[in-house]
Image (cartoon, rainbow, N blue to C red; front, side):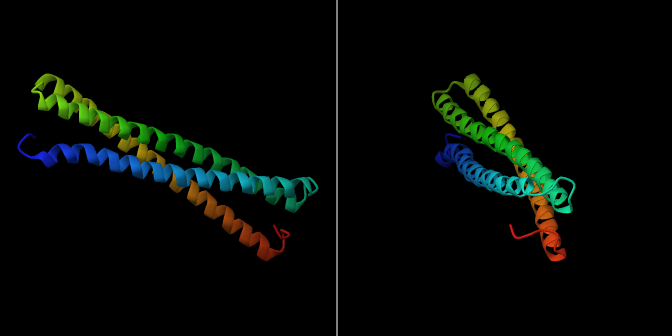
Length: 161
């Protein structure tokens, strides 16, 4: 590693870039949660105005159940993304500490920190993939809700919302 000054830079920069990517994904996921909360408030307003047992009440109830599921999925995804964010930041720190240890010829220390950085990085990637998979599941649910809303609107079951 001492022969190539860019090797240390690469080891440190990769987790830093992935930390930035996780931050952007966390922001987008937070925005999706806000949209689910806003839509839930709208649906609750419609449900209160409909008679229990009516077709409209049932349709709004189905939409509310999907919104609840979407909210739970998004919170799960956000937790995973935040875990990845923290782990990538820790990985970058471990990489810097390991590089300093290697510079001062602390071979055993450097290897231990390198292993710790590798394990932390692998955990971070796992958390990031988990968050992405959960976001895809939430997107599918959002599309199902949208399609049902369009079908209900076209069939005249729902008033304007």
